[in-house]
Image 1 (spheres, helix red, strand yellow):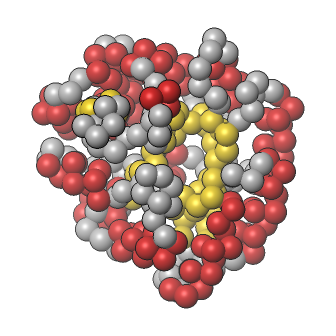
Image 2: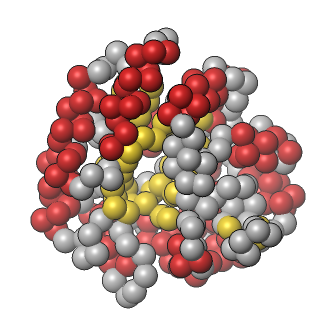
Length: 288
């Protein structure tokens, strides 16, 4: 299976190790909901842009795979697009979707397959995931958050060699985990010897409340610093709750390359419907 480190190959202009390939392109997903032509064009432009080194995989739902291929045939990318296939067609649809991607290797390079888990995250289901996804492709499974069994589900995902996914937001308040929930998740993952992926709600680097919805969003920089603290025995909850952008930026910038690689070996990447917003935030903080 590909490693988190391989996904973070150094980018142009010496992208810092803490930020290399951090932001996966989820332009097709809410709240961005970009059209396929716009999403593909935006991704290819970002890959050729000044901070291409911070850009990770292109996320596409399995149900829109044919649409993606049609668009890529039109634009003829110079090299295959590194893809994360998001399964929205059920586990049974994985083999066909994987086969389609692999048959268009001149357009797409399958790096990751992501899918939601059933409520009980049972062993049989996880074994089928392992069977359906090629060994050299990263498996990302999202246990359903909430209830006492959530972290047990996370542990089972880890035990089966998949990455757990942490959903940090969405269209309703229930989709936003609290600081304690995220801290508990980090404690399990950082001790489990596997990476995780985050998704949804991480629109900006630093924790903030959206004035339109009233929802408080976690920041991806908060998550990076919290992960660093989870590995060094620091105060994880304080890092997650902080709204002090300057202090978080300074702490992140002070990490050694070795510490940064260790952090990204745990917090591998996150999906964002905008590539401009995170890059802008990181630039304003002096981290890019």
